[in-house]
Image 1 (tube, helix red, strand yellow):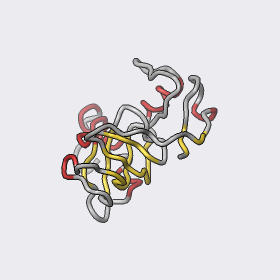
Image 2: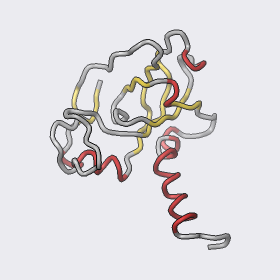
Image 3: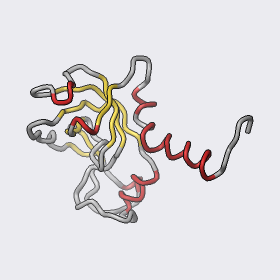
Image 4: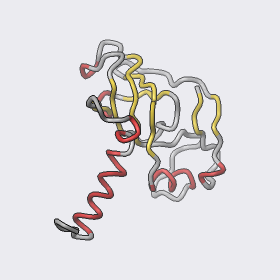
Length: 141
């Protein structure tokens, strides 16, 4: 599968797309075919090694994703192959596949584009918080 792989901390535009093995699964996990992944401020900091925690090198960045369940052995959390989902994880979303625990994903409602869902959990909610709680944006503004 193809994935963005950080082998050394560097500016985002210097991080390559590489061919890597599909991630292995543990019991109770789901394999998701990633249709869209969000990239936010935290992802940029992690890729450059400037975030307060550092992922061990090499790593696949990306915290937000949306896609389709490919494998769900034993249907953990009620998830079935073919279900559309969105999720958030510490890293690994900038790849064609991701393996996660069912707690990391939520069903994706019909009519919601993968690109929208992949930016919702961290990026959209951070912006909403900034506008409402920090900027005290009010009705009509």
